[in-house]
Length: 255
Image (cartoon, rainbow, N blue to C red; front, side, top):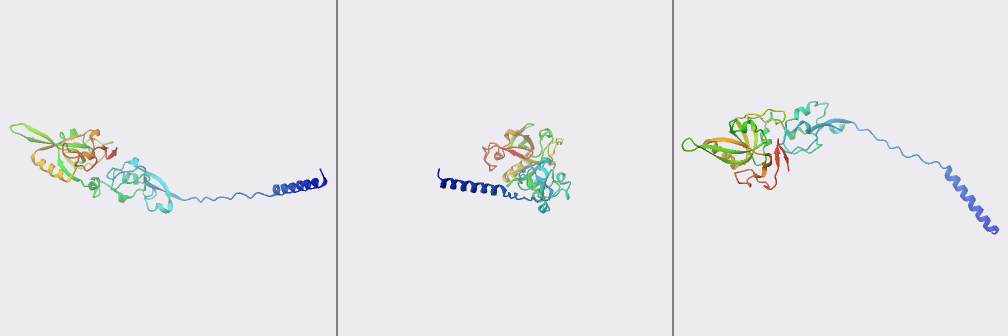
C-alpha cells in the first residue's frame, strides 16, 4: 500500500471520528408538550333509548349525562331540574326522538296537558269512545295499546241474540280515561273504551251503538298487525303493508 492511499485513509478516519463526536455531543430537543384544556360539564337529561312518536316514556328511557357547560343551558340540567326524570316519566312523545338526544319538553306531552289524546293518535286516525261492560271487556284485562276485535250483539226474533264481528285489530287508546301502563298497575274493569279508528270505521261503530251491545275481544300479540286493521277479512284499510307484522304491546312496536 503506497503512502498516498495511507494518507487518504487516515484523513477519512479522522473526519469520521470528528463527525461522530459532533453528533454524540449534540443535545436532542425535548418533545413538545400538549396542553389539554379541561372542559367544564353539567349533567343534562337525555333519552337513553330512542322513543317513537306516540309511545309512553318509561323511567329507563331517561338518564343524566355530562354535557358541555356552555350549551347545557339550552337543556334540562340536573342542577335546575332535579326531579325531571319523575316529571317526564309517563309522558308521550309528540314526535320521534333519538337515543342520546337531550330531552326537549316541547316534544313531550303529559296526561294532564291538553293534546294528550291527539298525541297518541296515529296519522289519519280518529279517537272514538264507546260504552262496554266489564264482562264484555275481557274481564277487565284490556288496557291501553292492546288490540281488539269489536263485536256487535243484537236481539233477534224471540229471546235469541245474534253476534257479529264488525271491526278487527283495533287499537285501544284508553279505558275509562285511564292511560296508565300495565306494569305495576291493577287491571281495570272499564265501562268506556276509547278506540283508534279510521274515519269510515267511526260511522260503523256509531251505528252499532244504536243497534245493540258492543263487546271487545282481546287479540293475541301474534295477531296484532297495525297494517291489517279494518273490517273482518279486510287487510287493506290500514294503509300499510299487510305482509309486514309488527307486534305492539304497551305502545312498543317490534318487527
